[in-house]
Image (tube, rainbow, N blue to C red; front, side, top):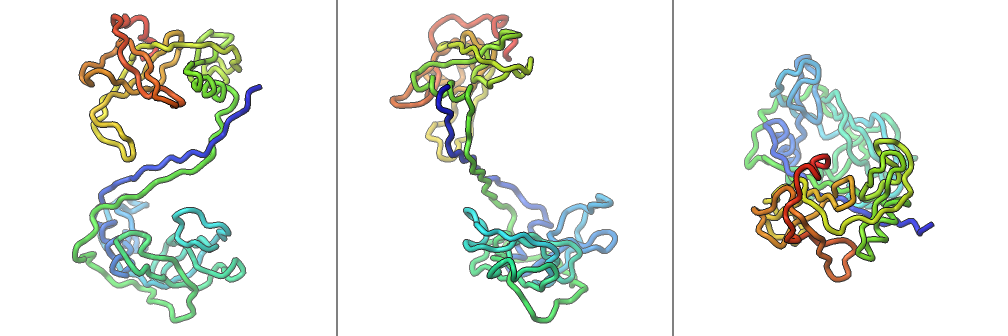
Length: 315
């Protein structure tokens, strides 16, 4: 049995969103060291604020200012902070009901250890030295033994100079991927510039990349089948937005390609021809870069286009 591979894998992208009047006021308020909530139809004050009443679904606009002090309602100790978490030393994740609010806000509590944290403890906001209009303007919470804030929050018009109207939220997922027996064999074959799949013993379909089992019949696949290297474009799209850290000029074409002998289309970039001449049925072949572990792109073979009936089941 071949060695089973594993490798760290990172999925990361920036998520850009615009803000409505409520979220804009909330985040701009944090920049100004002001915590805003919203009053619902029944008088409940929600922090963080939402645009619509969770009970009636009515639009909400009555902003109020709550205190920067509050009470821990529940907590969990984090002994090993991860990348980009609020604090670099062990801390507690806490839900804090700020004075004047009826709901709790999730954030970090700077505490020397889990024995120093308990439900019902009093805390206050520690503001970040530099604030930009984000939840990170609250650096963390810290223990507090002073006077509580008012129970009744004050009305606020939500107006600030230079309001925050949009945010970029980075999303990142770090994990270790283990492809398993079937995909390990597939990756090993690619090192030799070969593409292999596995045939289902029942329906006889060849799946590329192999999955170790037939998704239709639900039984294990073990018979290895070499496919391609040539194939047929079944569907495609033209990419017009340049991706961060991807050194490919737009526009370019990304396509589903049914390799000869395969019953499942895989993804690949089409190059070596004008992007607006790529079409369904185009016959293509892989182009390998020096030392690459997979084809860099696919280019036209010069053969006549494939008849639609030969690939229609893979569209």
